[in-house]
Amino acid sequence: MRKNSWKFALAVVCAAALACNSGKAPAEAAMKLAEEAVNGARAEAEKLVPDDFKSLSDDLAAAKDQMAKGDYKAALATAGSIQQKANDVMAKAKAKKDELTKSWNDLSGSVPKMVEAVKSRVDILSQSKKLPKGIDASQLASAKDALAGATSAWDEAQNAFKASNWSDAIAKATAAKDKATAALSALGMSGDAGAAPAK
Image 1 (spheres, helix red, strand yellow):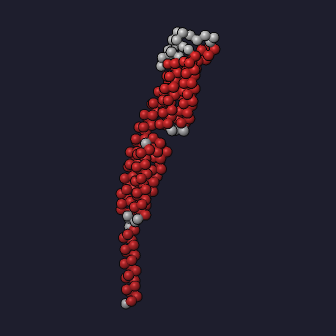
Image 2 (cartoon, rainbow, N blue to C red):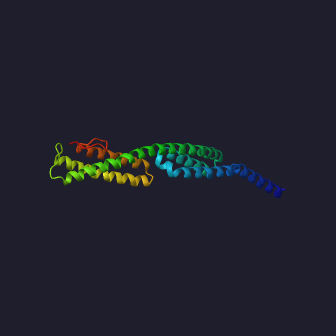
Image 3 (cartoon, rainbow, N blue to C red):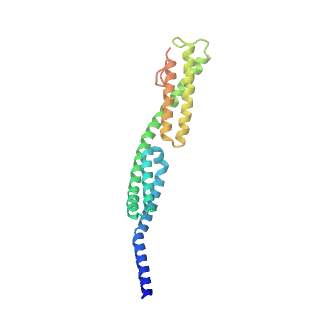
């Protein structure tokens, strides 16, 4: 009788353990997919939409915490929502990338021409024995400083672009454009790189 009681108690313990762990396997499978989704979004989303990616990462951390506490039902639900959220974050990252790419293309089509126009004008004026009417030595010096700043900012913008630091690349390219515009103004030239300098 005692032997049978021991077997019954063991069976109860096993049944209880099985009941507690019955949702563990599905939750673990969902967690694996959730982690893959977050890691897949990391490369671009972390740079392009950092706030959205942080929210996604926080959800994954919450799901892991639920798993660690044995709340497999909650972990399964959270992990399942992460996969859809990752898709949404990736869609936002793509839209942001498209927007930044357009801005970059616009800037890369204009800034180098502006910088080259300033450089060409500065070179001519620097070699002239007498500056033309409307431009004095201080204006030429100002243009040279702005040209140096524009050239440096554009180099930094290109490096940021190559490293896929999109927002940084746009910011530096915009700074380069502003400096080039200032140089053109100091030389009596318009913002249009192709415009003729003032006489």
